[in-house]
Image (cartoon, rainbow, N blue to C red; front, top):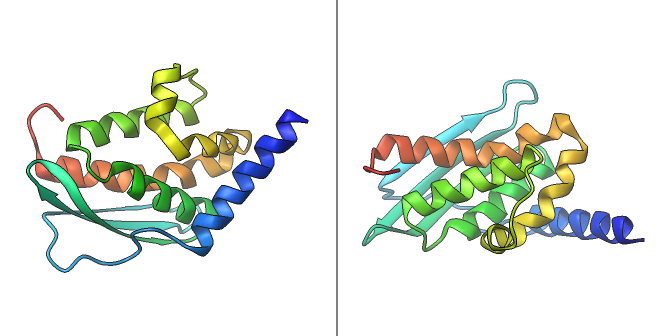
Length: 150
Protein backbone atom coordinates (compact mmCIF):
# COMPACT_ATOMS: atom_id res chain seq x y z
CA UNK A 1 0.00 0.00 0.00
CA UNK A 2 2.75 2.49 0.96
CA UNK A 3 4.68 1.72 -2.26
CA UNK A 4 1.53 2.43 -4.31
CA UNK A 5 1.06 5.80 -2.57
CA UNK A 6 4.68 6.73 -3.29
CA UNK A 7 4.22 5.77 -6.94
CA UNK A 8 1.13 7.97 -7.15
CA UNK A 9 2.94 10.89 -5.49
CA UNK A 10 5.86 10.43 -7.89
CA UNK A 11 3.58 10.34 -10.91
CA UNK A 12 1.48 13.29 -9.69
CA UNK A 13 4.57 15.45 -9.09
CA UNK A 14 6.01 14.67 -12.52
CA UNK A 15 2.71 15.33 -14.27
CA UNK A 16 2.12 18.59 -12.38
CA UNK A 17 5.57 19.96 -13.21
CA UNK A 18 5.30 18.72 -16.80
CA UNK A 19 1.95 20.48 -17.27
CA UNK A 20 2.98 23.66 -15.46
CA UNK A 21 6.77 23.96 -15.54
CA UNK A 22 8.26 26.58 -13.25
CA UNK A 23 10.79 29.13 -14.48
CA UNK A 24 10.36 28.06 -18.11
CA UNK A 25 11.62 31.22 -19.74
CA UNK A 26 14.80 32.47 -21.30
CA UNK A 27 16.45 35.25 -19.32
CA UNK A 28 17.54 38.22 -21.42
CA UNK A 29 20.60 39.22 -19.38
CA UNK A 30 21.91 36.22 -17.43
CA UNK A 31 25.17 36.20 -15.54
CA UNK A 32 25.64 32.49 -16.22
CA UNK A 33 24.49 30.09 -18.91
CA UNK A 34 24.82 26.36 -19.28
CA UNK A 35 23.37 23.44 -21.16
CA UNK A 36 23.29 19.67 -21.19
CA UNK A 37 22.22 17.08 -23.75
CA UNK A 38 21.50 13.39 -23.38
CA UNK A 39 22.68 11.95 -26.71
CA UNK A 40 20.98 8.61 -26.03
CA UNK A 41 17.42 9.96 -25.93
CA UNK A 42 17.73 13.50 -27.29
CA UNK A 43 16.67 15.31 -24.09
CA UNK A 44 18.10 18.81 -23.78
CA UNK A 45 18.25 21.47 -21.06
CA UNK A 46 19.45 25.06 -21.25
CA UNK A 47 19.68 27.21 -18.13
CA UNK A 48 20.36 30.87 -17.45
CA UNK A 49 21.09 32.29 -13.98
CA UNK A 50 21.07 35.83 -12.62
CA UNK A 51 23.11 36.33 -9.46
CA UNK A 52 22.47 39.01 -6.87
CA UNK A 53 24.70 39.34 -3.82
CA UNK A 54 26.16 35.90 -4.52
CA UNK A 55 22.80 34.11 -4.67
CA UNK A 56 20.65 32.76 -7.49
CA UNK A 57 18.04 35.51 -7.86
CA UNK A 58 16.52 34.34 -11.14
CA UNK A 59 16.71 31.19 -13.19
CA UNK A 60 15.40 30.42 -16.63
CA UNK A 61 15.15 26.83 -17.81
CA UNK A 62 14.26 25.43 -21.21
CA UNK A 63 13.88 21.66 -21.04
CA UNK A 64 12.94 19.59 -24.07
CA UNK A 65 12.28 15.89 -24.10
CA UNK A 66 10.64 13.43 -21.75
CA UNK A 67 8.40 14.25 -18.82
CA UNK A 68 11.03 13.24 -16.26
CA UNK A 69 13.56 15.65 -17.75
CA UNK A 70 11.05 18.50 -17.88
CA UNK A 71 9.63 17.87 -14.39
CA UNK A 72 13.05 17.58 -12.78
CA UNK A 73 14.17 20.79 -14.49
CA UNK A 74 11.10 22.56 -13.10
CA UNK A 75 11.62 21.22 -9.56
CA UNK A 76 15.35 21.90 -9.58
CA UNK A 77 14.82 25.47 -10.79
CA UNK A 78 12.58 26.11 -7.80
CA UNK A 79 14.96 24.39 -5.40
CA UNK A 80 18.04 26.46 -6.30
CA UNK A 81 16.39 29.89 -6.16
CA UNK A 82 17.98 31.90 -3.36
CA UNK A 83 20.93 29.54 -2.97
CA UNK A 84 24.59 30.39 -3.44
CA UNK A 85 26.35 28.52 -6.22
CA UNK A 86 28.11 26.38 -3.60
CA UNK A 87 24.74 25.48 -2.03
CA UNK A 88 23.29 24.68 -5.46
CA UNK A 89 26.27 22.42 -6.14
CA UNK A 90 25.72 20.66 -2.80
CA UNK A 91 22.07 20.12 -3.73
CA UNK A 92 23.22 18.73 -7.10
CA UNK A 93 25.49 16.26 -5.33
CA UNK A 94 22.70 15.20 -2.93
CA UNK A 95 20.32 14.61 -5.83
CA UNK A 96 22.95 12.62 -7.75
CA UNK A 97 23.58 10.57 -4.63
CA UNK A 98 19.87 9.86 -4.24
CA UNK A 99 19.69 8.77 -7.88
CA UNK A 100 22.66 6.49 -7.24
CA UNK A 101 20.85 4.84 -4.32
CA UNK A 102 22.49 6.64 -1.40
CA UNK A 103 20.56 6.74 1.87
CA UNK A 104 20.11 10.39 2.73
CA UNK A 105 19.84 11.64 6.29
CA UNK A 106 16.69 13.40 7.43
CA UNK A 107 18.49 16.74 7.17
CA UNK A 108 19.61 15.96 3.63
CA UNK A 109 16.08 14.91 2.64
CA UNK A 110 14.86 18.18 4.13
CA UNK A 111 17.24 20.12 1.89
CA UNK A 112 15.95 18.20 -1.12
CA UNK A 113 12.32 19.23 -0.56
CA UNK A 114 10.04 18.26 -3.43
CA UNK A 115 12.96 16.69 -5.30
CA UNK A 116 12.53 13.70 -2.95
CA UNK A 117 9.45 12.71 -4.94
CA UNK A 118 11.77 11.80 -7.82
CA UNK A 119 13.43 8.98 -5.86
CA UNK A 120 11.13 6.61 -7.76
CA UNK A 121 13.13 7.28 -10.91
CA UNK A 122 15.77 4.92 -9.47
CA UNK A 123 13.37 2.09 -10.27
CA UNK A 124 13.98 2.82 -13.98
CA UNK A 125 17.78 2.97 -14.50
CA UNK A 126 17.52 4.16 -18.12
CA UNK A 127 15.60 7.24 -16.88
CA UNK A 128 18.14 8.34 -14.25
CA UNK A 129 20.10 10.33 -16.86
CA UNK A 130 16.88 12.18 -17.70
CA UNK A 131 16.51 13.25 -14.06
CA UNK A 132 20.18 14.25 -13.82
CA UNK A 133 20.26 16.36 -16.99
CA UNK A 134 19.24 19.67 -15.38
CA UNK A 135 21.95 19.19 -12.78
CA UNK A 136 24.51 18.76 -15.56
CA UNK A 137 23.37 22.10 -17.01
CA UNK A 138 23.57 23.75 -13.58
CA UNK A 139 27.02 22.25 -13.04
CA UNK A 140 27.99 23.71 -16.45
CA UNK A 141 26.91 27.20 -15.31
CA UNK A 142 28.80 26.87 -12.03
CA UNK A 143 32.00 25.69 -13.70
CA UNK A 144 31.77 28.51 -16.24
CA UNK A 145 31.61 30.99 -13.36
CA UNK A 146 34.60 29.49 -11.57
CA UNK A 147 33.62 30.67 -8.09
CA UNK A 148 36.27 29.67 -5.54
CA UNK A 149 35.07 26.92 -3.23
CA UNK A 150 32.39 25.64 -5.63
